Image 1: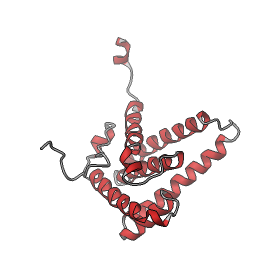
Image 2: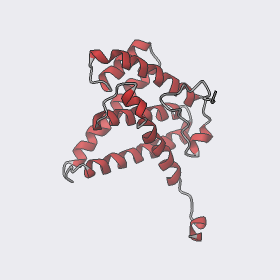
Image 3: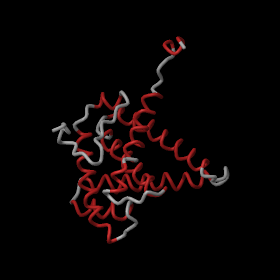
Image 4: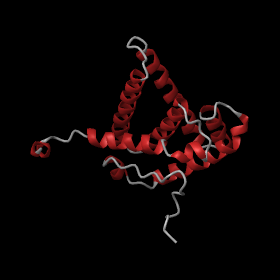
Length: 186
């Protein structure tokens, strides 16, 4: 037990905390009830991608340190996706092909969300409608609400110091709460 104090910290715990926070935020029930995201493997995958994107979007302006931190979180994401595929019964020979699809989906969405986040609201709504809501026109209102949420989260992370992220903290407010209003009891 005492030997744990003599271990060298290689940052794994920090990365696990950051990736764990991404997964925890993506599982917020409000996304599936209030925002109408499908509570399915595909819907949960999209929410993990969306929350990972938010972190990577924030880290891109942090130079080499941000790039390294982002790469380590991406590696944790890939390990998690690989483990989940195997847990779902995907065979060893098929996992690499599925992981290529996961990586392709990830990079495609990051590129689209990054461009859309800096563009007009309609562009972000369309990207979310296509990826999160499978282009279902009756989900346009939910996609619009999710676009507002995404912009709020991006702004909250922009205000978060890099040192906070480097400690493994990802201070994302719950989906039912505004990141700009402190929730205080009445």
